[in-house]
Length: 582
Image: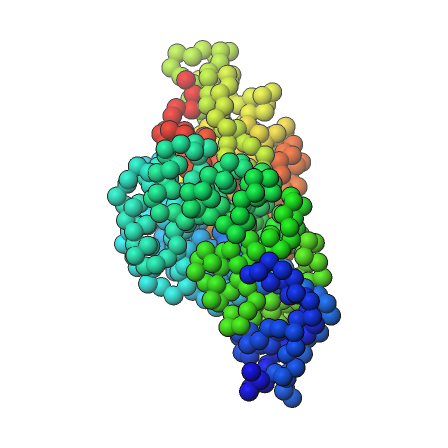
């Protein structure tokens, strides 16, 4: 009403009004404190002698972008450094599921993430991880979370809901503990995140939909998105560093004609290099438009739609009176590039530069030393014994994990592999090398060895990572057992990370000392180190796009078809362990 002067007025912009689906020219916004007081054709009545004025000069005024489902740890940086990387891109809100650190440190790890999130200049809401372990009986994480922990977390400020319920057989199979976690969340009035990673859309899918999850980001086909929307789930279409699931599923809108207001765009997992070199939700918006979505529709799917889904649209997700002044100025909705970013009424970034101070948050010592091996590894630890009675020169049938480019699922392959010296060996001619998982939480000495196809290595080498979704033991893939041992030992020496060993030398590495998952360095430094690792992957013959993220999912025992855990090889279609060779 102009009875108080505005702190900030933006003049002469084009209002991207996501709540009505229109662009309104010649719009002013008046801001008092952290919130919008007025938005309309003329805010001159709110001007005072101390009011700061920003001339939009015809640029679009959009709500700040929201990432509805993501894991900070996948960026290999802390919450603070993730915020530093994405805020200049126009991101002003994130819904994060810290189930990576939860698998290492349990409730204590989640609390650390909540505390760090609360200090940020943008909104960072935290979902309480639901599946630690992701599949009980098939893996051993460093900690466990159950209904009691969920009940406690639902009382914490900053907890927005329950993280993705990955153990989908436990939902449709009426597992008491899983249902109790969902019940605690619903009792607290919070949102249950979904994760149905099966292509089966029959009765199991319907049982999962009835179990309480409100969204799902695991679809890869148009029919996945359509069926989820019909069942009342909000399909979350993801474009991460290695997951390209928007192009196929967006056809549910562009071709099948479904209402886009039920759909959400997200990233799920973004590598530091992607954040630094390509972007965050601005990248997703540009990609979605390239797949045929109208720019304003794509914008709705990463602003108003997620805000309404999580029940926070009274605060964020649209430009309207009373909402936080989370505003982005850009010249093009289709080729979205943030020029000015305002968060809670403060100019926090301009022309790609962060202008605000970020918190100095420190993780305790025990969190920075979390790699515990029983002993140093040797090459013999990575042998696969041949079946009894199998003679040298013969072959053995092996179950092989088949990597799928740009997708989270794997294929369950079989191959005849050579037997020599009482062991089964990999076969470069078939593109098959060894994969092993080394237990690192309790120092038990357990090592599980299997086979994988798809990395394309054509020289003696090994790649290793302490990022191994979701139990986060040490994963190593290689063509040479001695180099595999060297790679694992080098990871232990630097308290976790990702690296490549070739010619007897560690050629490149990125250190991730915080829980073996995150660096304490800024994203550009982490991105440069990670790119050096990827360059070494390529030098070894690997042509996969973001192969380090493909590596990290080889242990994810809740996404079909075949994975490896510290307890053995897992057929995820049947949720049971199987022999590696026969």
